[in-house]
Image (cartoon, rainbow, N blue to C red; front, side, top):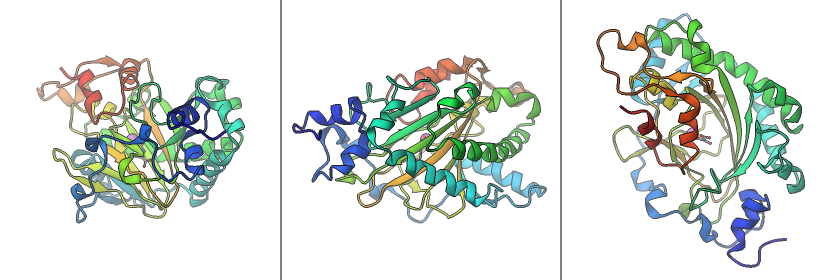
Length: 350
Ligand code: OGA
Ligand code: NI
């Protein structure tokens, strides 16, 4: 049943499991008030720098040391870059995008089986907004999150996307490993011995941003940095991802490039590198005319790992700016509060 009172929208989207996709399908004339962001949390298009862009790195020649240098430089300066000729086959990317659309097109009775209350496993969860129980103003986004590294949950993954996600993650992890190897080399750290610390756990999200009434009043994803070591993100051709230019209040668009993958540094790598590599704050604008999907893979430390500045980084007498924290505590802190820019890092600051 469609809501009849304005107060019913949260109930309809969150409790009843229709999500923002369900609201979008109602073709409302205006944005429900539960989604109207305060002015400071909207994306101010006058603050977007049209002439600047993040680097696009060609990964076809891996033996070229120049490629590793470009990766390191981009991680230091921007915390964000795109990669092309990365080696993940185009069909694998197309298949996971199709699977994402197929999952979100399922009738609500099928999708609701994956909400927190009903999902047969904690490792597969469908959510609307970011933290609907915590967010004062809801975000205009639905997402399915799968803890891929929990292999025993595989039997419970939705059949609409199961095989496609598996293949996408498998192929992409090879690229993530190569990127992390280059980044670790930049710190004089041997990647092999640190694999579980840096990428011992993998999560894949399927993000769905349906057409939004009054998109300028809403936000797709609020300002945040990822808690990952590294994020690998496939976006479609709609656009809407923006990153904050470091130390400024200006934003830069991450334009869709067919076949490219967006890479960003997460908080875990900022901490491990003692701030040499920077996680960048980013957000996603809502769109008034197109549905948008994106498919991020988060390479994370294992939850039982202690993260802190690596000894190799501090060898030359550099002072640590972060303490050692249990990674699962760091993640818990992230999920205790709504999106708030890069404030999660305060948890680990000395
Ligand atoms: C995220 C995110 C960006 C996008 O899921 O953490 O920032 O383009 N997504 O969907
Ligand atoms: Ni993000």
